[in-house]
Image (cartoon, rainbow, N blue to C red; front, side, top):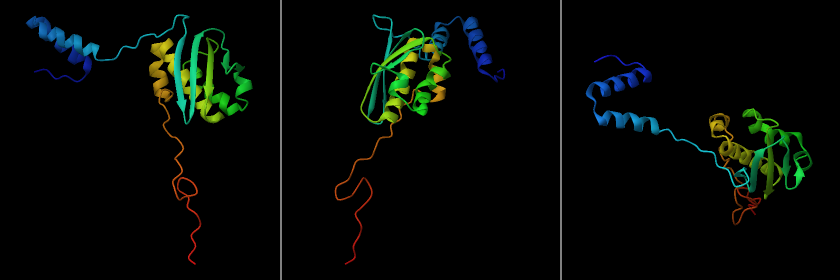
Length: 174
């Protein structure tokens, strides 16, 4: 038996074996090996927009993306009006810059719940998901940057008999 050191050599060996035998089982096995990788399709609504929901802490962002000039509207305000801090603006722009799609899409979003930081994180998550729905080939870049992963950290609830989630009242010996 020949030494096989890479996937290309394995594919060539399987193809040669299938041609030599002419068996249908080898052809079916090769076809299923190619189809195991998931194929992502473009998901657009009737207006030609991609829709996604992003979440972070208690904030939820509903995001619509369509081809345009790069405007970002959040709750009927511009991005700079709604998120005045430059750090939050940078967080929102991260997936667009990582995908190299500056000034190519108009983004309309509604955000509710949580604080400004959580809302910016939710908007970032929603923009990332919507970009993958509009252009499925961007998924690898955004996944590698960690933009498609929902940050599941939330505030721990307050416990009965305590001041906060873990802090207790001051202990008195007497």
